[in-house]
Image (spheres, rainbow, N blue to C red):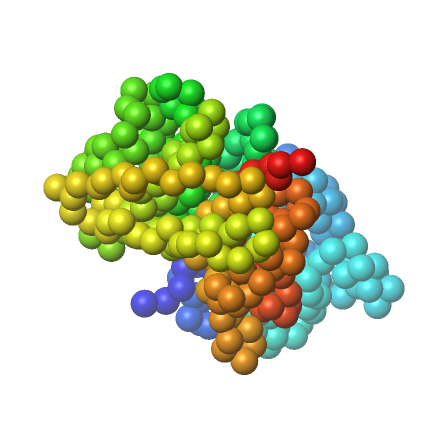
Length: 384
């Protein structure tokens, strides 16, 4: 099937216009054409028609190719414009080409008409596709920027002030939006829930699931004191909402600032790291159940309480930092994390978080950050 070509001919001679249409039809096109010979007709045609190409005689009794080109440019339409004349000087031909015409042909030698039209139409369509792709990319980037801003507002703007504690948390997504989550949630009885979570993948989908998880946890934590029950109920709802390939790893540490004790529950999340005042790894907080969203009937239990000692440091993280891989395929690993925490344990919690994330980026040495980095650091004050 031949390609339909919509042609606007700026020409006062109906015969000359028919010759052009015939040559293009002989070149394999199905022609849909209109002929104009005044500025008013040209303006109407540009407003009402969808043209693939404009073929313009240079001189008409009441119109001209330069005027037609000006009207086209004022319309903002990207339509190839080819001048076809019976004979004008080289200076005029050069002038109109510099003014924006795409090609110039002589009426007495139209052998180049079909190839010239094919080239200009092809390039114009490529320009349209390029602009559409750029527009789609810009729209997607703008949507991602908005999603990023919204997600960042879901994270705590600052940690709560807790007497005898230094607390800080940060999430650095691998893309504009991420699937990681951290939060500080006040609970009944004066305790505080420190939460880190990780939805499979990163991008818009995981970010939406993260926001849903956050909403469930915040609602449940307002009314329940048992963090095992909070995970159990959140899991029941999430399992009904998400597909089989999605899941959420999540750890809740329930801190009682008054008694300096904590208990935790972990739904398939990487272990928390608990260091003593000398920087030695005191214990890990391992997984206590499977990730959320996998089985609706899973029950989660809170650990027994642990007493925090002066100078202790607790690090809660998603797996992004630990699994950052260097160019030679070496993981950043838990040992580097513990070594950094030990070396910087005297620094403020916020500085430790930043140093940890910077070290992971340094380990991948210029490569793109492979996953979201999210960390909460809790430090207890040392006794004088």
